[in-house]
Amino acid sequence: MSAKVPEKILANTFIGKRITITQSMNQFAFKLLKVFCSRHQSDSRNMCFSPLEVFNSYVMLLIGSKGITETQLEDMLCLKNFNNPKRYKELMELRKWIIKSNHEIMVYGTVIYVDRKLQMQPDYLEKVKNMFEIKPKPVDFTKIDECVNLINKEAKAMTDGLIEGVIHQKDLQEEKEIKLIISNAVFFRGYWLFKFGDIHKEPFHYASGKNSAPIDMMSHLGYHRYYYDDYLRADTVSVAYASSDIRMVIILPKSINDEAIYLVDLLDAERLSKLFWQLQHSPKSLTELTIPRFALDAHKVSLQKSVQQMGSTSIYDRDQAELGGICANDRLHLTKLVHKAFILVDERGSQTPSIKVWYQN
Image 1 (cartoon, rainbow, N blue to C red):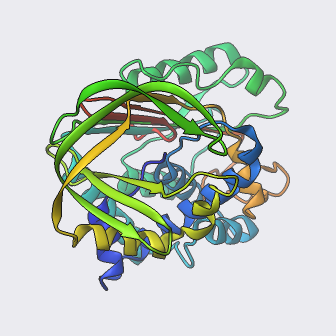
Image 2: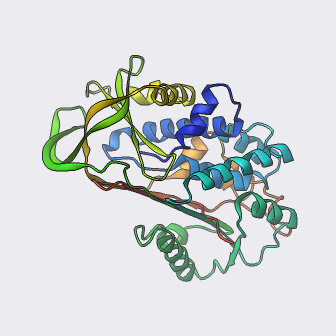
């Protein structure tokens, strides 16, 4: 499960209101999802990440990139010719909309940790402050234990203690040169508009559908927006949260088999926008909705390998990375982008923390 751009924005993209940053976010989200699935298909593990926050993290690097690094990041993020004032303004307006629409239930932030010896470019500091309300934090990376403790402490604080241990000493001990680490946290305090009840055990089928395990299920009989998508061969339903424009959209394939992964192949940004539009314009109907009551903790995924597979290879290479727009006195490359996600779904609502970039003044 992943955190998406709010349904209202996605729907506007489809009905003709050209929101190019939103389109880029969605295109990137599905590129990343498909790479993750191809790399982890044999793991038989749940997957949880926030493409929106990963996107924002790499945009923070894009605005200070040059040459091949800029080209590769633009291709990966689906953001052609991004580094100009018009696109910056578009991104700022989109972020303001997300914050304003969901400020009552969303807590999120980003921290950029940089080597304390680096001289940051004033122009870069101004851009990240204006766009993301963030100021890079200088640290002494020679003291690995202290850095790890600091990153984990701040991530834990941002998620009300729900996420711990986002980075470990061993993650940095093998690095020859540490100059830049990005850590991100987002906490979604969502509660259903209508609470679920009737907690009971049911067999839950997984993998190819041949295996099952008894888990807690919860039900709600009420009015929801429902739509059956013939192309995806799947039922879809939109579940509303209280005090928010955000919806949880559940996509359930009609059958589970060895090819259940077909949904990943069929879904893309355009298809999802159309699906959201159909749901938004479907009349609410009396629906008996039964879903699992679960806590989905994230396993570690390697963003570096996935990003490199998506074509952005130079950003992690200390000899090839071109981030001269960020640092004035030294070559700079990205050492780590710390990413971990967690989602809790129960009868009260769902909470979605994810560890990524931290917006901090």
